[in-house]
Image (cartoon, rainbow, N blue to C red; front, side, top):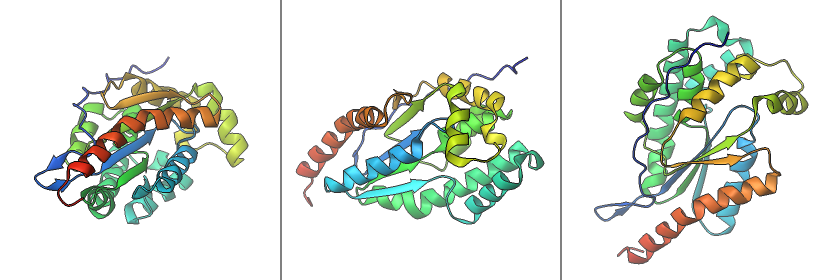
Length: 235
């Protein structure tokens, strides 16, 4: 019997990309989310490259990071998460994200860059929530330390597709994050999210079709950024 999941926390109002604070122009934060094997990393790389070719200042990041907390998370992924409590795992992700925000994300946004992020705290809500931690608590604690995303691309794919993709790409046993029953709970929590900045894209489509959908979702925000630059006295 599948465990009943708590409803995945109330959405927060989405910010406007490139909003101004006084005379300081803010950048744009784009997070790409979805369950394992949905193609996030591939699409993040394509998006960053395409934006750079158009002349945008782009910062590509991923979570967990390569910092000390991120390395610890990756070590646990290799050795097995069964030996760490969900609260301990949550704290590691929170500290890793806090450092990423302080060192990388906020400085990039302050200078007006487009930040393309492979996973963000929506993954924490879904993955640690699927292990039993309260999704509302996860959201509240993360939004204390992390800026809201301007756009969240949520790549959707049936769990049944994931096993073939993961095994074909990695040729190794699945860890806790890649067990089908667990991923079903993760997907349920992603499906419940109704934040206004979330755009869902069918990741079962051809890779080029998926990428075009991402570009279409981002283009209105980039247009606002260009308008802000034109109006800025220091542009």
